Image (cartoon, rainbow, N blue to C red; front, side, top):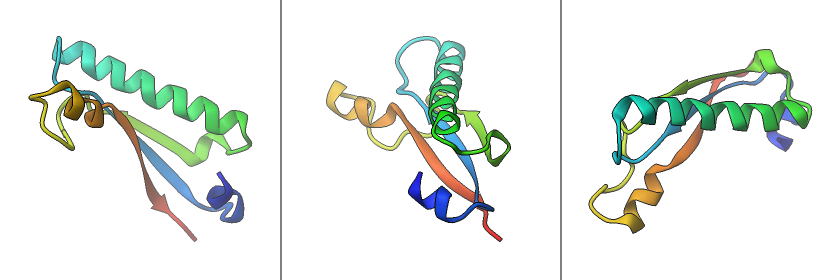
Length: 86
């Protein structure tokens, strides 16, 4: 948040992810809920809502193997991408 506070024109995209366990459609919903939770946190801490967009990708873009629980945990995440900075 310090980065966004120091750069009031910065915009970001939150990208929610899950592992590949369970129903793929439910995983997309779960990833969207993760994005919403992070956005709520940022807004509550002073980042303007219009500066934040988000997308839930479910298990479509794994970071690690889904073969073991230890590596599946790495796929349950929200990434932040800078989309604009003037």
